[in-house]
Structures are given as C-alpha cells and as structure tokens.
Image (cartoon, rainbow, N blue to C red; front, side, top):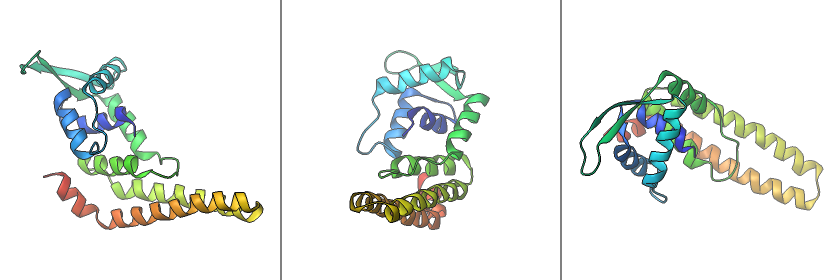
Length: 174
C-alpha cells in the first residue's frame, strides 16, 4: 500500500499533524502493521518537498511544536490519480484496495467507480490466465488456477464491498 498516497487521502478532509495521521492510519489500515512514527514524518517531509502538502501552522504538543499539514492542489491531483488507477491484480490486494475504498468514501468520491475499474482489471487478468491454462502444460495450468482462484475471491470481495458501501461509509465517519 502506498503510504504517501494514503497520507494524502487522510489529509484531504482536514489538515492534521503527524501524530493524528499515525493514529488514524493505524486505526483504519494498520491493525497488523502499525505505521512507525519515523515513516510518518519522513513521508510528510517528502510530500512537503514535492509540493503535495504544506505546513498550515504549528501547535504546542507534549514535546516539540507540532506542524499541522494540509494537502495542496498538486497533492489532490496525485491522490486522484492514485485512487483512479487499478492495482495490478494479484493475491493479497485487499489492503490497498480497501484503503482506496475507505479514502474515497472519506473524501466523498465515488467508491463504486474504483471498484468497477478494479473489477475490470481483474476480469482482464482472468482472461489472460485462462488462455495460459488452455495453452500450457500441467505446470502452467496449476499456476494459472492458483491465480484464478485468488482473483475469484477478490471479485467476490469487490461485489460484497460494493453492496456494503453505504454501511461502510457510516462506520468510518463515526
């Protein structure tokens, strides 16, 4: 999952400082792998240098003053491009796809469109694997079947998630 793009998505609704971003990231996406503080601040520094975020003031904290960052117009463009581009269909896609769905809902973008684009990418990859299975030997067939079974599971997840978008939107906005 792209930490840079995810942080941009978390910054879009409102400016935040690093501690808030880490807490929100971990709550939404980091159950198994929380984001290290150092990665948050290093990523914010890179985004700032690239002009995708800008400091929107500071506020006192328990330690040093905290910079509050906001997304810039170029950051919104980068985020929109990332959200609109399907992920390469492969096993274990859900963490990134789930992040895109959540960030789309948080920002008021049409998550259905992202799911439709991902479904189309999966179906295209399934056609490729089906051709590979038909033309190859047993090894190719088994490899293709492995990929097809994972893609079928992803498609079921996409359909289920699309059916539950309204409910998910309510849950993440709490």
